[in-house]
Length: 359
Image 1: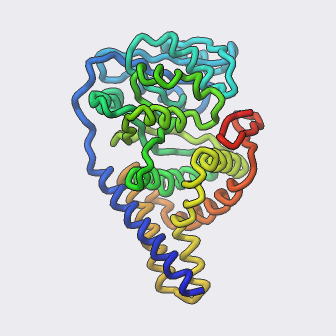
Image 2 (image 1 turned 135 degrees about the vertical axis):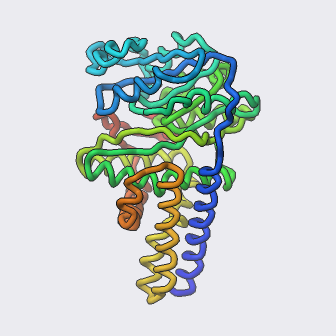
Image 3 (image 1 turned 90 degrees about the vertical axis):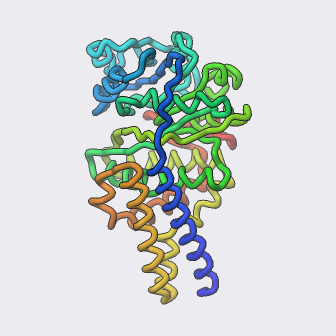
């Protein structure tokens, strides 16, 4: 058993070192400061009023960019976010376009209202810095770049949501930075997708991904297949997690896991090599305490570098000793994601086919 655990721990340790290097590289990166001359249309699907929504809208309206528009779309005429949109004098539209993925249905209607050749899409609760538009769209001046996306710092008011945010900062963000080094770069995140309208049209518009749950990944992958590069901007945006219970966190995480599995089966199957805490526990069980402690220390260091130096998450510094607990929780989520084809999203139970489409 020792001869099996030793090499696995070595691979897990190597991943932590590579992740630290990827995070340090991202931390040292600087946004390209040459703005595009094109106007930008920001499309933001809205569903209900959540804490921080007012800050999110205000941060977009106050952008230091010469020519842009913010378009908000909602599916239901009595959405309780409408008064907030009205109070901030933000352009908003009823978007009843039917689609299996309701968010994409909204975007299908919103893009018809868009006036500019550069499109930026992000989730309703995303809060952005003042130079966000300038910095995330500047890479599109290079014709080889197709999609620009951003990492995000998640915050929460409840213990379950803060625990989930710890995983975003110390597991998800570093893995996203390592992925391009492993040749995986076709993804995009709901926190930001910036692309040319011409490229969106070339992949068939939003309608082409209207039946996929992982719409952000599909948009990124399809534009990537046009021969474009997808890049992660140095800009970090902020979001707020709304889980009030541990059950909410579990449902959200399992939905995410199953979506990843159906989008990238090979990548999902290979994730266990990154489970440093799991292999540290296995090493300790075999009496290899020095190996277990060294691997655990390396894992915590990687989490701090990614969560604090890159994302500037204060909770990572406060609760870094919980990283191993969060890791073992993540192993349980990964295991649950290995099987099943149903997810809960927006109060609905959805069934997915083998390609991740809503059926």
